[in-house]
Length: 460
Ligand SMILES: Nc1ncnc2c1ncn2[C@@H]1O[C@H](COP(=O)(O)OP(=O)(O)OP(=O)(O)O)[C@@H](O)[C@H]1O
Ligand SMILES: [Mg+2]
Image (cartoon, rainbow, N blue to C red; front, side):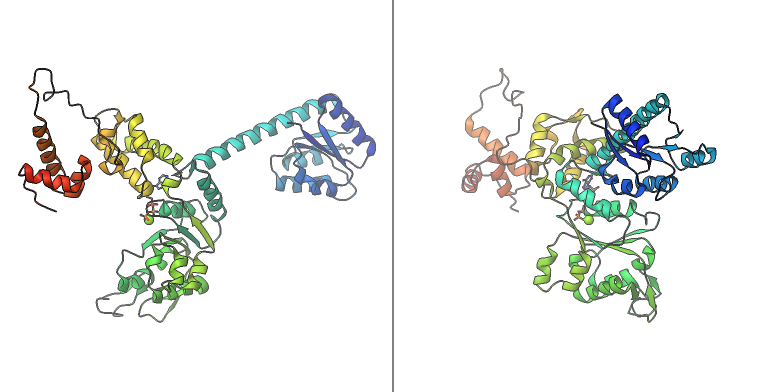
């Protein structure tokens, strides 16, 4: 790409001279300025190098150097000066100047210095770009995804790491809501403080308030001693209110107070306790709908969702299925000391085609299960959980063994049918619906055959 060189000097002859050299030698683009301030205003054009005179009419060159460096530390600046003062030279190098040239300028030395500085900067930009891509494309901490929407989600997350915005994470079960909450906490400036999870759905309603805010001794039957709540435990860290959609209205009002006034009381207490904990919350419910149904406070909803993040379900980012499979195989290999190499093509097709109602969690569990079941280097269709097979899938069973070997008698068709039915009943534990489905016959036919072969079913 064409380079852009900025030259700042109040002597027109110097500007002309250097411009001439640079254009002649490399055909770079040049812009000249006789005031430092003008140049600073043009930094947005992203020059690749700045040649900067120290004595300027408005601000002195050292000050300009500082301002340039505060905006872009890596951008190379070469200082030029009529005063042959060694101190100024050293000062500018200390402040990050790339090099220093006394006037009159020696072209034979300036040329290689410019070339060198540009190469350096180019390399730096390349490395930064690469690091950026690796981070952004494949992971945010340990969140694996190559999906476009997930990438923009990562970008959004990176904006809320170091502020106190209350983030509401919305997504179906198993999409990675907690993972995102953890990423926000552990990548931000509260990372050395506690990360406290409260699952609002799994704690009985009457106990949730005390769980969150603590209680004083004797405040209710069973409160034998003072209890410190999760908000106090979180200190200056993060409190993650999971399944907040399940919280009852009276408690919602108390959460609103924490957000607005940064304070709460313990149950049965009359001391106001201040808190500085950051609040993140998650739900798989449509909270806006819950607000309309008057099941969720509108004011709290607006407070919580000042920064909403929606994690798309896995079926809407099928590309991630493949990356996640490899990621989970690798991590279970490490955890379980195994050396599974991958998934066979037919198995991959089944995994890809499946709808994943339980999202990433279901995929993770399926892979773990397959790895335990497999006795070869690759996960194959026969290792996959049954619910992954859709109706059109027929298992590839090899029947040419004993029963169908060339020397065995030909089996009457009726007998085969009878055995198939008995087998299906056994395997499904008498679940007629499932057995009929797997046999690809209607339920009526199935009942008729049960009767015909006099098969007893312990009906479920
Ligand atoms: N993008 C991802 N990369 C790697 N692992 C993931 C990803 N998304 C989810 N997981 C893993 O899937 C599992 C479920 O994630 P998590 O618990 O964060 O989901 P959730 O949305 O909170 O689910 P639930 O609604 O069931 O509580 C975890 O083991 C998590 O590590
Ligand atoms: Mg969760």
